Image 1: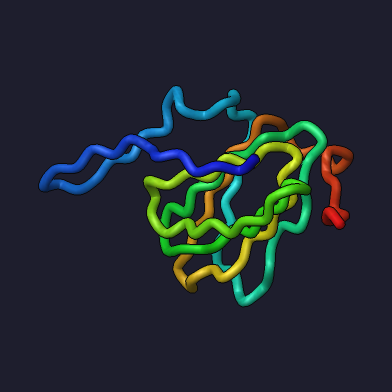
Image 2: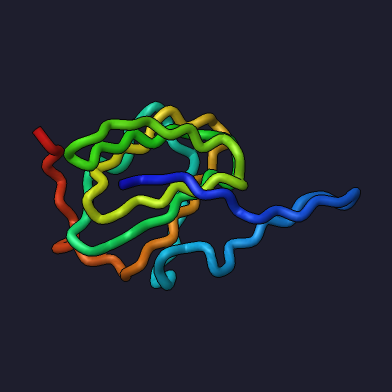
Length: 121
């Protein structure tokens, strides 16, 4: 089931530093980021084995999630929020602000055979 976790952030007069260390439930094997998104909906899949962690490091976006039992929409509007997506979480990324940068960390390298595109009934 998808869930939000809070990332440790340190602030002082110079700015903020957010750390992703020992909080993800997997070892990171792949990192990608999505940006300059128009009004398109991204994603529309789940995975057989891959777990992901999504952080909107600038701007904001929403992630709709359906794990086959629960449908939820998460607002990622702060780089201290990290959304963990389990393999069973069919998700779509939408409503990106013009300045949004969504970083995604994955537990495995890209493999088209790991993707399931059909949504739950």
